[in-house]
Image 1 (cartoon, helix red, strand yellow):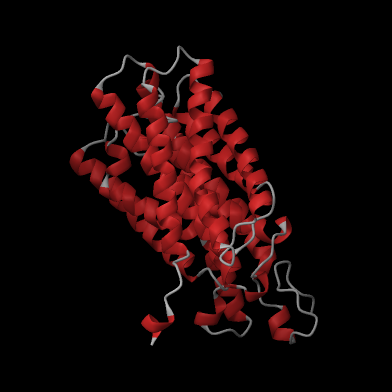
Image 2 (tube, helix red, strand yellow):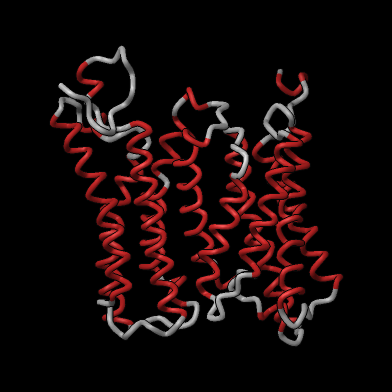
Length: 352
């Protein structure tokens, strides 16, 4: 019997194992569908932010979003059924790393039905309310469960322990990008990229506080996910350039002016951080380099961002005390997280 397209590649595997659908080939297909899913989320967000959504649940933007969900759901369910028909138990029929993703399939459907009922009972949200609506948060949680499948699957494979190959880690990186972009989407009300006016409008304490809090929040989420990846793998060169640039491009969709400056700034920061990573080689075994990298990356990212705003707009109205201070503070926040992911060794006396 010929092996399946997505079958795990093991020449000494049994006939049953060779026909099992899963492995890296399956990860790559799910990676594409997951990114289409997050693209549907951002397209729907773009329609909301540009006033293109009618007061009805049934819109073309929702159609794209739910079609992307359906593609992910059908593939996950179909593969599980096929593996079960080939002799696997229900528990073993789900490809490794995708059980949580499979839980997200019915949860998203429940959230969608709940969202329709919610709108019927309470009307349609405006402003930042769509990002915090209870039913939308159910949808966000279930979408993250689905999108995280390739990342969880590749994380579980022991043979991928120290790899830095794009061919192996690309599905995990794009899965990470999808999850991270969901988090930045639902916190876009506190994002410097989507609210650049906080930096360029006449300064007020409210604008300054709002903008500074946004920098710290976004930097913490970014570095939390990046340091987690570094805790597990030596990332291939170019990883940060891809993550920073694509996320900034998605977030830029919310800007009605389609400002390219934040995207270019993210790309520049990504290139610098990739070169820094190549030079420092941070890892669990090189904790000093790991902590230095954690401290410097958000500083590079936001210095690049602030420079782009200064050069391409009417200028930053914040004082240097504020924009430089919050940039350095983001580095300290990331440094503290590095101690959670790579804690200092306990002294021998304490161990006993």
